[in-house]
Amino acid sequence: MAKTNKKAEETVTPKGRLFEYAPAPESPAAAGDIQSSYGHFIGGEFVDSSGSEALKTVNPATEQVLAEFAQGTEEDVDRAVAAARKAFTDWSALPGSERAKYLFRIARIVQERSRELAVLESIDNGKPIKETRDFDLPMVASWFFYYAGWADKLDYAGFGPNPRPVGVAGQVIPWNFPLMMLAWKIAPALATGNTVVLKPAETTPLTALRFAEICRQAGLPKGVVNIVTGDGRTGAALTAHPDVNKVAFTGSTPVGRAIARQVAGTRKKLSLELGGKAANIVFDDAPIDQAVEGIVNGIFFNQGHVCCAGSRLLVQESIQDELLDALKRRMATLRVGDPLDKNTDIGAINSAGQLARITELAASGEAEGAERWAPSCELPSAGYWFRPTLFTGVSQAHRIAREEIFGPVLSVLTFRTPAEAVEKANNTQFGLSAGIWTEKGSRILWMANQLKAGVVWANSFNKFDPTSPFGGYKESGYGREGGRHGLEAYLDV
Image (cartoon, rainbow, N blue to C red; front, side):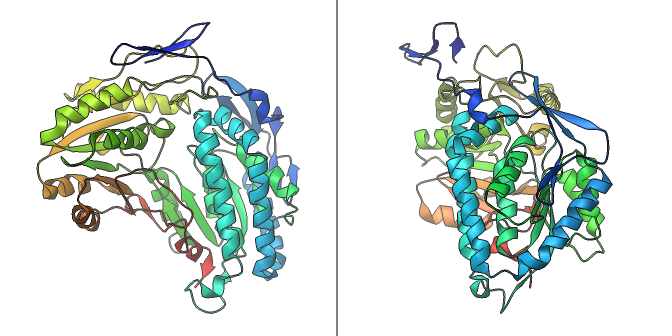
């Protein structure tokens, strides 16, 4: 594991050879001007809140306050929904080809401002710049490009002739992929002729507010996109609003349950993308090195702040020792530190609260008898950090095998037969994703058909594309985002 000094950073390989890494920082100035305080974006303008309460967003790598932002009130939500309702009449009446022009324009502006947005996301969220730069921002642009292409083809999407938009969409997004989750929700909503009121997470509001500037830059009609900031109280006011026709939520399963109860008995459409406890299943014929990279990507990408993270490793018993030795060697090379350093693999945990939850669940793993291992490394003195960690000797009864940790913690279980692997993989209340590692194509197809998961990756993990639907079963939610399927939630069919 890397150690930092004033001259250079060094990593010692398993064979003892020394590699030196000069610091490669991205400039925080590239994020552009971060205002000291923000209001809401309603009716195409930045406006003050009707209330006086303000929240703060901090840089999780330094604990420094970045900005204050408004705590949205019910009156603020009323204003935003009214602006969206007013804009809906003209926006929904536009030909799809005209709506597409705005979406294409937004996609291009996102590409042009991608460096700025990537740096801002890393500062506000804590994730490494190489992830925001090489994954998040390309995905954001591709989502707008893709749904721009659908805007004038809705009659041919398979939902019947002349499908109509549902109206005003209330959307609540999480803090782990703030800008990407915004794109996943706003792009299909606008393509289908709906207007939007979006509430970003209270720990990561800055890129959503910067996106509001992009909407103005693109000339988007006023009121088509509205952004109201705040915590769960604001989100609850939005999802409960009687003039919201569609609710889309990505976040924790407990909050998803509360929203489902809240909208029950109403005519609102609802889609939920909730928690996960994905199984990453490695058979004895899998290519070990390739599987190790998939395991690392599956659980340590974005500090494990991924709903579909492969947090349960199911490895065939005959190769357990070989695989774990290779995995530990690979984990020892992961670099934990400054998210703006282009060499960083694992950045900061998003918040003090999330760090406390990860720490508590990891402690429970030890208390219940699992064996904990993490590479030695020197963590920064300020900020929220957690070493990449794996547990062996885990049983299905352990909390770390049952509960979503949402951090860089991997639980290792073993199996002997494919049937046992399926049984253990499905032994969870979640059903969002899974990974299969084997050279046998027939086994992949059989396993994929048996696994109760919305997305199954074969000899890969965390692969996303706007043309492919994403979503879960059981307590991982319902509804799909992405692809043609992602249009249905925003159409009256």
